[in-house]
Amino acid sequence: MTLFQCLLMGFLIVCAICVSFSKNLLNSILIYMSYSLVMAILWMCLESPDLAITEAAVGAGVTSILFFATLKKIQAISIEKEPPKKEAEEHE
Amino acid sequence: MSRRKSRDEYEKTFAFRFFRWLSGRKDPYVGEVEMQPQQERVIPEETIIERMRESEMIRDKIYDEELNRAARIFHRIYVGVAIFFCVALVGILLLAVSCLPPNGHADNPVNNVVSERYIESGLQETGALNIVSGMILTYRAFDTFGETNVLFIATCCVMILLMLDDAILKKEAASNDRRYEPKNDAILQGVAFVLCPIIFIFGIYIILNGHLSPGGGFSGGAVMGSGLILYVAAFGFRKTQRFFDEHIYKIAKITALCMYGLIGTYFYMTGANGIENHIPLGIPGHILSSGIILPINVCVGLEVACTMYAFYALFRRGGL
Image 1 (spheres, one colour):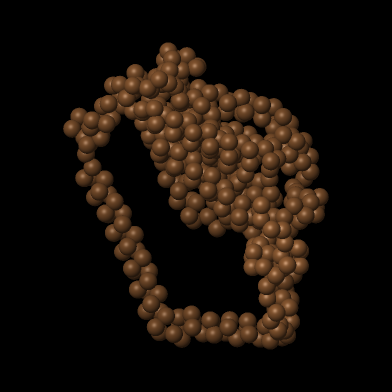
Image 2: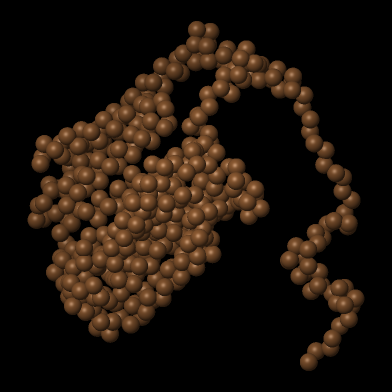
């Protein structure tokens, strides 16, 4: 059990470092989501299931979905990559 | 009965002008003050491009470290100071952790009269098997009321910032709602069809069993809110509006908050926290027991579920 918890802790630290070093915003949100999920499992191991439920619902679910919605609103998730290139060519 | 005035006479009074100004039917300055129509300032495109180019050139010159000696020195000092502050912060935090009392010791400051009282007589005084729930909803019900208010005010602020007019919403509904998403995604709809009822039932179970098992209003409300968001993402806003539109949202949210306020006030007025009161506590372990905890859990759950859904809907579309 302790080994399992230590593995999860190590995963948390790796996730936290990866979030801040990731260049792509979408990737960092996905890593943050997995961070919350692992945190929920850890709460379960620490015998506080109510926190685990809340963490899974709010941290992994609602918060990341709100981040996705915001990224879509400010058009940081690029679906079509054509228009920015054209603009760059015009400026050159 | 007072004297009736004719309409012409009434229009000259101060009251008429005041109420006209209040309802916004007539701007008091229009027609009274001389005004000039505002001219739109036109900047030719070439000027803009030239300015951008100039500012870029200036920026390049300033930040070119080979030319600008001051920038080079500043950059080095900046990196050094940043590393120093990071290391210092880590050191201070580690030092603070090493000064904390050891975990699980009997003389720790956590083990004082308050927690002793909660653990020893919590079951008799609140009637809840889940001590956490009994603590935050009876001993600290006022505290939790403040948190519920925070949720309410947060949604109000998001509404003020992001809410769009109905006319704009209707115009955008056809085109903008899922511009970047495949409509009627089969996998998402199939998964949502199976999962949504289970998620809702699980949320309701957590809320109603808040005083018996782990969980409570906040957890259950968050689960139900996530279920609503999944339903919206799969089936669109039009289908959701059949059972949860702005009208129902307002009724649910305001009723939940007012009910919590009323129940809490009644509980405190008739004697809370160990004073003899006449709210029956029931038999611990039964679903209808522990006094005010069950209705307050339902109120908090409704409030949280509405908040989660409203955040998503306002972020996504600008309306409920």
